Amino acid sequence: MRRSTSPVALLLTFLLGACTSVALQSSAATRADADEASPPDPRPDPSALAATVVAFADAPSATAPNGKATITHLARGHNAYLGHLRMDANGAVPPHRDPTEEYIHVLEGSGVMTIDGQEYAIAAGTTIYMPADAEVSYQNGDQEMVAVQIFAGPEPAAKYEAWEAKP
Image (tube, rainbow, N blue to C red; front, top):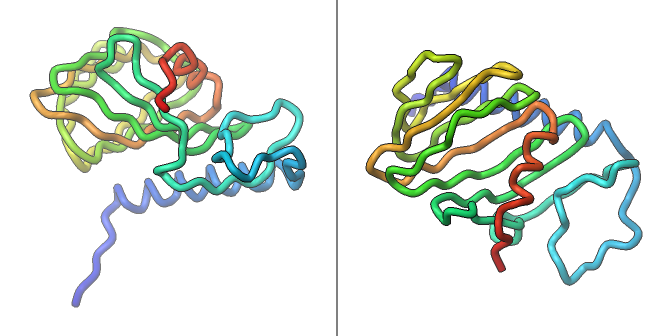
């Protein structure tokens, strides 16, 4: 059986490895006050971070104010953020700018991403890189979109704090 590795898979593996490496190197501290009954909170303590391992089912999620998107917070460190994004069919992200680089890998769905005025058709299997301060917008197609989202700094993910936490 031949097993091939696509450039996208290699890129995603590299990015996840880099994020994990940076997060683990950032801190050797442990959370002495961690409550074992609740899942770990992926938001960083400003002073130090401990390694965090969380099952997808236990990761905290939030819903956009319009109810058309959900973000599941998978990991957040001093140098990166990793989330699992789901958007309803025909949903949209208005033009905005984030202060750090952003990466999105589309797992399901399709739509049109606009980066600094250039439109790109995206679909499952597409990986998108957005430079810091790029003007970005997105129009989802007629199916739900599911993607992995990485910020090269945790600051842009603060916008999700205005979203309603899911139980």
